[in-house]
Image 1 (cartoon, rainbow, N blue to C red):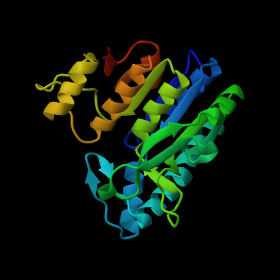
Image 2: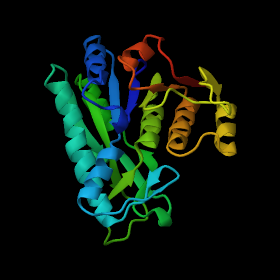
Image 3: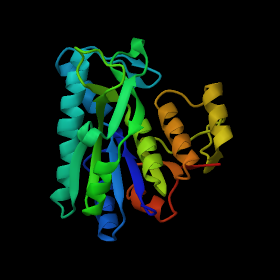
Amino acid sequence: MKDLTVIKIGGSTFNSGDTTIEDILALQKQGKPLVVVHGGGNTVTDWLKRLGIDTKFVRGERVTDLPSLEVVTAVLSGLVNKEITAAINTRGGKAVGISGADGSLIESRVKDKDMGLVGTVEKVNPAVLGALLKGGFVPVVSPVSLYTLERPADALALINVNGDPIAGEIAAALGAKTLLFLTDVDGIKDKSGRILATISKAAAEGLVASGVISGGMIPKINACLRALNAGTVARIIDGRTPHALWLALEGKGGGTAIIK
């Protein structure tokens, strides 16, 4: 696992001209072990609208009641996960789509009662990832996870977890060399709006505390810091840039690296 890269793909970076799948295929052919964690919040929101279910976000995370959880599970662990997995496999790659519930990969508890069925990662059981990587597959992980801790007896055993902390926890659990976030922004900006090529852990925490970093970027920063503590190199890059993944692993391209 010394050369392992964990890649978090935001749903907003996928479009008809996206090159991420091409980069994954090229890296797999080189023998580089990869784990892909994906989001897909925009697709979930679209489906909730179709079904007449309201959506509310708090600190960049979706408030999730039972009807929302059912849609989240169907869309993320079904449609989005299988689209990514199929895209890799039909182009000659080897991928297996799973969720955080498969193999008890991610065990969670409710994060905040006001958020509903939104979980925080409590335990990672990476055996299923190890088996897939050993077999030469790219695990493609949906963030829907197991609700195992402090779960009421009548509650569904699934829970909605933000994919960002899942990516950070997986990177830490596997001792990944690199954690990459492919986002729809150029990187982390300072107070003046300037993109920072590198930022220290302390400086990143300061920008969050001061409100310069807000919304959906906060879970990404926290995930990077978690992986950083485990010795992983963490970087946030613009996934809309052609071949952003390939360039990042070649030490090129833009974005922000978070360092100790």
